[in-house]
Image (cartoon, rainbow, N blue to C red; front, side, top):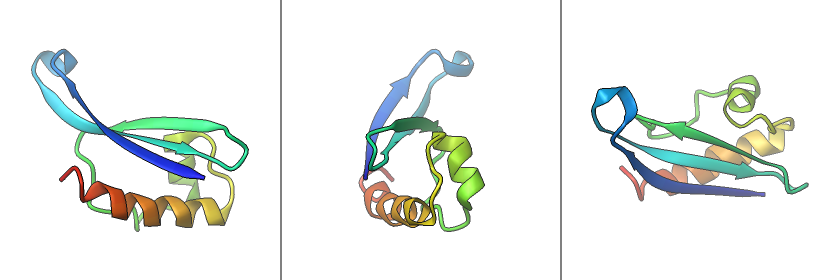
Length: 80
């Protein structure tokens, strides 16, 4: 499993400029899901499996949820 984060600066959103972070989750089968967070939280500790599946569309196991929460917390420090 992988969690990849990278920054995107988009000047066309909402007739102004917004900065955020793309977060991509690739499960052990190689299936990937990606989401963009305009105002990324410091952690995803509050998120449950259903919420993470809404973000990435490929989160089905508890191990994946725990992996995403742990890696997100490690990686987000590079962006905020």
